[in-house]
Image 1 (cartoon, rainbow, N blue to C red):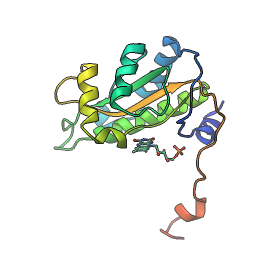
Image 2 (cartoon, protein in one colour):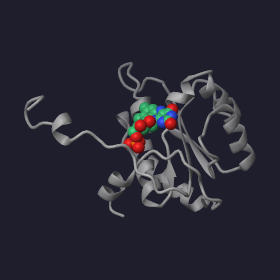
Image 3 (cartoon, protein in one colour):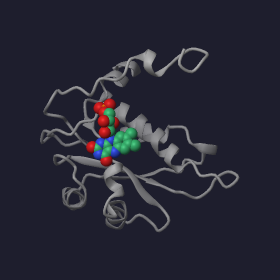
Image 4 (spheres, rainbow, N blue to C red):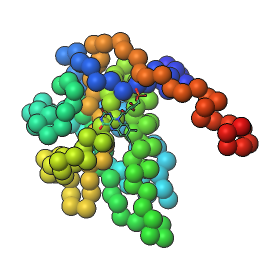
Length: 172
Ligand SMILES: Cc1cc2nc3c(=O)[nH]c(=O)nc-3n(C[C@H](O)[C@H](O)[C@H](O)COP(=O)(O)O)c2cc1C
């Protein structure tokens, strides 16, 4: 699958997964795609906890609604320490890494959903951090539950090009 196919085929998946495991080799390949992402001042501030232990996955499901039980999960951990003239880029760094991983996940035949908003409720990010041993000062920002999808659903329609992009002047 080329990169444009992966971009078009990618969509958030909240359906069921098959029993097929996600081998560590594949999880490593996916996270390596995240490691290749750009980051502010090349500080590479995002770190990752890859969860494939069924007991830990079950404990995560007690904290966060994962929609359906995934075979594995990637927790993306941010470090808000300033890196340049008092500025931090931890959310941008993390988002760039996540998009790379979403495309890799799609290209490899797996499915996932970017879970972020949900973690901001009821101290879920903090509780996940405690569970996964994340050090003080760092925070779980995004989690990607994944597996082989059972359903072949599509994502929502995107607005047409001319409603969101223009050459030379905003609004065309
Ligand atoms: C910053 C951000 C936060 C998100 N948080 C959640 C979330 O907490 N739970 C969820 O189910 N989806 C979450 N999503 C996924 C969006 O709902 C999804 O990307 C959007 O509806 C568009 O659908 P698509 O990904 O299929 O194109 C999040 C996406 C982004 C970029």
